[in-house]
Image 1 (tube, rainbow, N blue to C red):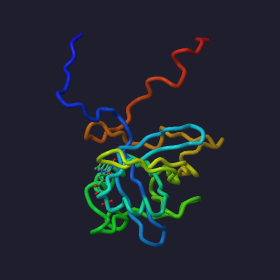
Image 2: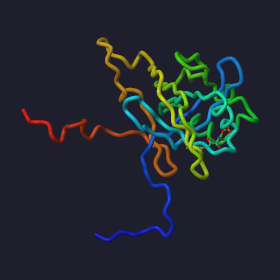
Image 3: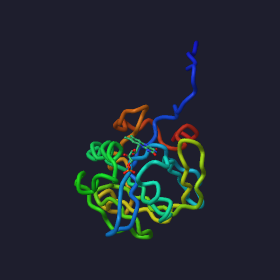
Image 4: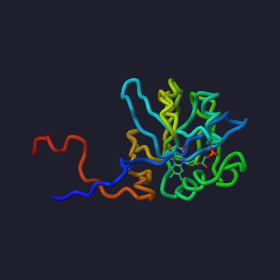
Length: 189
Ligand SMILES: Cc1cc2nc3c(=O)[nH]c(=O)nc-3n(C[C@H](O)[C@H](O)[C@H](O)COP(=O)(O)O)c2cc1C
């Protein structure tokens, strides 16, 4: 098999989630920013990161409050996901413009997005200056989900949330399940 090597290395780790991060204070100055450079970095304590350019309007809010919420968008929020990443809170109120409702969070003063099926509340532990982006390493302090995705036994079904994947510039639907964790080593009955 032959491989083509790009002349310049770049960011090719896809697919990944593109999320809407909310920041500021519920009822006060608030904003939202679309972020693709995000991920999980530790299971216990549960920790995540978001990488943000200093020139983003959201940057100082994130740095000053040390709190944010990662809102996972459903397919019907794709337009808002894109627009929150192509407009600035310095000029418009994105909540109003995108018809998204700020909701009080459980453990942080940053707002969540009421319409998002999954909201991950985070407290910043460290900020690493990496280059173009600063990485906000944060601990997850609360996770809430829309209760319609819980079944009668209280089990959460993430597959019913219709979450969106981001792949090299494109927003994509998640397709069918290919297997489940550990299926390759599970004994056949
Ligand atoms: C799909 C997508 C992913 C993005 N990912 C990031 C990111 O990871 N980090 C970042 O600093 N900006 C990212 N941006 C750009 C910001 O969302 C954009 O500059 C936004 O307008 C900033 O909003 P603000 O000025 O209100 O903070 C992304 C934009 C899009 C559309």
